[in-house]
Image (cartoon, rainbow, N blue to C red; front, side, top):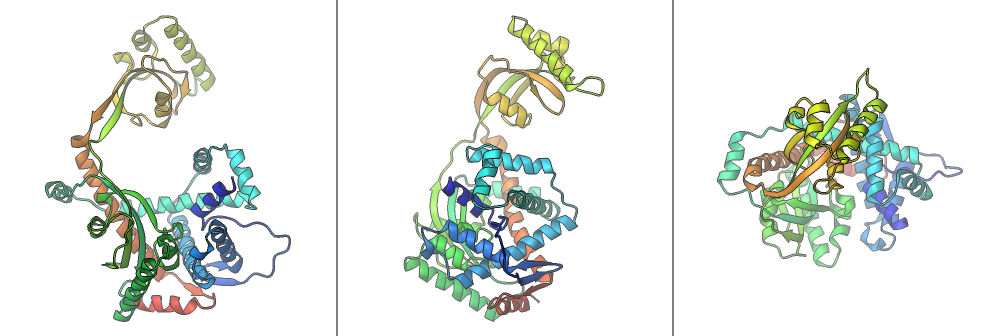
Length: 438
């Protein structure tokens, strides 16, 4: 359990809350971020969290002063993103936070109360942890809004990607380090970034673990997760990274690659090819009894349960749907929903379908429309390669542009913000970065 929660703490590193001390010493400000501040205690807690994660491999962490600067940069950026999200009307409802916590608990084979107990057992204040999850969702929504408002994919770009045969299938698992340069970087700043990238490569070749090098050197958002990008579709990655990865054997690290925002190192962690895009489709029927101001949820549930009993007793499902279903689109078809992918009718229908066998009639279940029963008619596996090609191309181009654009957005937001670094040893580096982007 301890290992599990340490992993959770790392995943939410800039969000995790501290243990409460009986008597805390006087705090000090280590950074001013517009009208907010970063306190030494906040930074110390982030350092402690990461050191706990690497307790068995402390040699993978950089010296404390380097680690503090890395974490301070991320705390500053996080505060700026939350501030921008709130200032532009981005909202996250309490119910969405509840859902996120439920998913987190399920992923770790816990219920929410057990998750809470495990978090508090590690000395983390649960209310603050919940707020931090809220902030994480807020930043995710900001990222989506920025992409939707700034990223455009034309039909000509989609045609070109498909026509030129660049819609390659397969996935790559990469480790990633970026030594970033500010917008409008001077030649000296570019040379300094190149030298830092070359030093990182030298250390990796000398035996330093790639994940440790990412924590020590990388400016990427995933640096504190060891630079692991996970499995990505080849076309979601910048072409230059894919080209470099194709020249590597598994386990090898590239030479520093010059990019528009700095210098990159990648490590090929894995490669897999994909064949046909096989999708499981479902053919089902359903009966709906709607809820309204005149029909309560309890009344609708009672009605649908009565219909289900009649069907189980031998009444034809199609006949019952035509007579009783209040779904205008399917009632006249005997409740026929046609063939559709698992999530074609939403999460609740998908969850019900996954637990059903052919011919089975479900228990009553509720959606925002009312109460349903459903009968699974059949399933099939379909090759959707041709149909999905164009949509895949659009998504690939959008994702690729969105990542580059959000990196640019973050650099611009950081350069425009009032940030005063008061952490000893970190202020000079921050001043050098800001002068290069002015």
